[in-house]
Length: 227
Image (tube, rainbow, N blue to C red; front, side, top):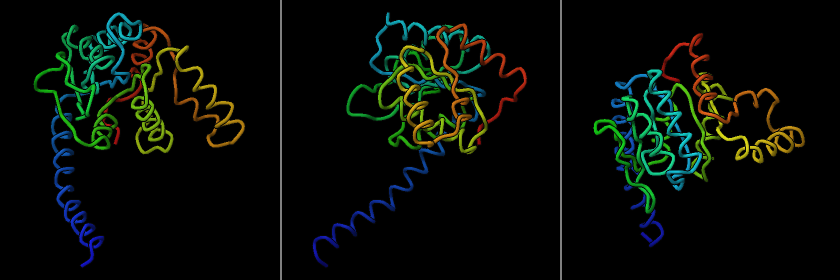
């Protein structure tokens, strides 16, 4: 066996064992989250500091939604994620952290309930947990990770791979450039999406608007897993 063939054989063997690790992450996540009840996921930058208006908005949104009876799911780290868990905890609500192992920035924050902190090695498994068990998504300003989560959720709703679920972008000033590009280039110039796809997104500025939007939506819609 030549060197390339031997290396590829070792890779195949490693991949076979990796399947069991991936399955274990799915099983742990499903079992833990199914017990918690209806939740809202809040996404945003790990780099946003306390005192930043978006940090304070995330804190207030999480606290108010927890008072409405929703658990709060975050990515488990610092920044906006910390604000979300902190708000849930301050309201006496369920505070969930789906933490991911990264080389920097990602240690579990101290505001996650001890029995609701779940660690992942795989981004794709973690995103399934966000999507399956969230009754709504709050997109605070963030970086590549937040954009990844934003487009993942939008795609799942657009393609009806999960039920239509409230998706709110917080901060008109922050999101306006991206949304303008989606409208003028992606939709009108290239026809890569339909006009009704933009209706999947709700852009709001204040915590009060966000909470009221979810409250109104769930006066006529059932709470249930998304798929």
